[in-house]
Structure formats: structure tokens, C-alpha cells
Length: 223
Image 1 (cartoon, helix red, strand yellow):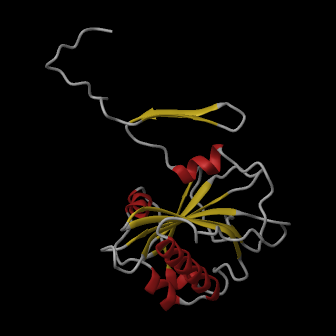
Image 2 (image 1 turned 180 degrees about the horizontal axis):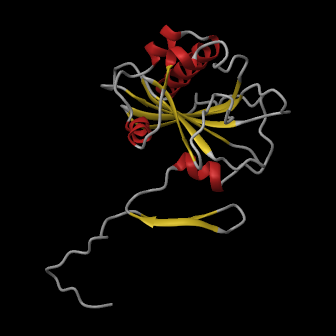
Image 3 (image 1 turned 90 degrees about the vertical axis):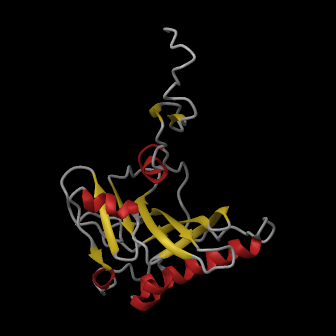
């Protein structure tokens, strides 16, 4: 390595360096500066090793620090799914933050399209009868949190289908109301390697898929 001298700062100093391994010990990627997108990484390289159970209960957060706050988020998550599966447009709109998500904008700026919530919640589009299991929540700060769940949408012609869902939550202050900023899902199962991800914000839902652009839906299928 050449001597850069004291006057030259290392452009990599202080940047995140990461290296990823699959469950079998194979490398799936590495990088410096920008962390991997966790949901896409799970869908592609870190699949569950066991069959996912529709009856798994939500994590018990009663003994965790700030348990009341965690339960508030899980309760709002349940309300979101109730509105989603029943087609309650006003309920969905009430739960979402009014700010647009940069993750959704990224897809749109790349040429993707968005289905507004009015369309997503139609009888033929919404995931009526979808089951949710294993909900959990991670509190980052007093104003930022993430929740997860495994979705089991009804899929005609298939014995089972499962998706990993992640919700990003935010609020204006430590005493404010939690609002959903981003809802994202990806197919996730022991034998299913994901090829697309669904991203939703206050406007509706859009898809980021490998290969030809096709329509994505809440069942985790490409139409």
C-alpha cells in the first residue's frame, strides 16, 4: 500500500463494511459504504430453514423495555392488516403517514408504476382471508420503529404461500401517534427464492422485480 500522507484522508474511513454468508456458509455479497437491503437479502440469500407456521403467535413484548410503546405498534400493525384484508380504505389511509416514501419513489423514478389504494383494496385485488403470524417489533428510537410478520395469503392452486413483511413506523415526537411510513413484502419460504418485492406507502403499492416488468399482487404472485 502506498503512503498517502497525513494530509490525505482515507475516503473509506468510518464507512460501513459488510460481508454476507448464507446459512450454508457461501458468500452472497459484500460492500463498503451502503448496507444491503435487508428484506431483499433475506428473500434471496437467507431463507428460513423450517416450515413457517400460520399459528405462530406474536412475540410477547410485555417484559421488554418500553413494552407499552412496542404493544402500541403491534396493535397498529394488527389494525393495518384488518383494514387491508377487509378493504377498509379510510382505515388504511388513517394508518399511513402522509409523507411519500423514498423507497417507493425509487421504483417510480426507475420507470415503475403504482397502484393506488383504491385499486389495491378492490375485491379482486386485496388479500381477503390472509393470515398473519409471528409478529414482532424493533424500537430504534422514540420516533422510529420496525415491525415484522409472516403473511399467508390464500393462493389458488398452491398448498401454501408465505411472505415476509416489514413495516417502517415513525412519529413526530415521543408522545405522538405512530404512523406507517413503508410496508414491504417479499416471498419467503424454505424453497422459494424471491424474484420481486412489494413496496407500499400512503399512495399505494408498487413492485420491484427482476426481469420483465409484470404486475405484482398481495398474494406474492406475478400476474
